[in-house]
Image (cartoon, rainbow, N blue to C red):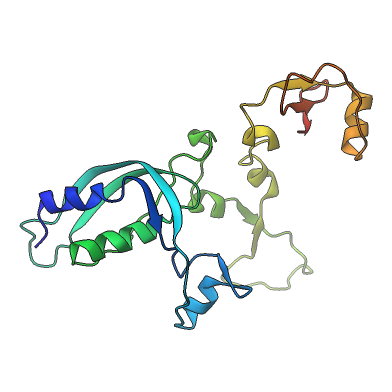
Length: 213
């Protein structure tokens, strides 16, 4: 029996800087073990709340009033948050606050630290990067097998990868010579007098290939 007004009021408590207790299903550690290992055993351990920031929390869609028999209530949210935020914990806490309970049925990351959203791929796209395994048996051997063994198509997988410097698109780029790139790639220092004005730069070789930060 949740109303639209109650939902909006509850959502408002999760906006801005808040304290959040990490989920038991997170990878944070307690006494040297990830929390999810305790959760799989049905054990709950104490967790300290952490400060997070929810910059934006939009209600995109809601369906929980005048439900037909068998229909499930749901809401669709869009969240812009700081690192360390557990969306599942927000939903758990929202359901508890409303007194009806709640769980995540779909979770999709739409942006992350400036990475291009059009380069994101689905699990299904990754799984489709398979090819028939190279035949290792002698002719006539294995005939009649119903399923053909598959193996990863590494060329197809490589096409999905982003270059390493995609993580730092905001850094100014400085080109170095082939010899300097070789020295840097082998752990050697590079002496220069023209980079003092930068805090960090990304260095690339004459072909534009990323070398290091």
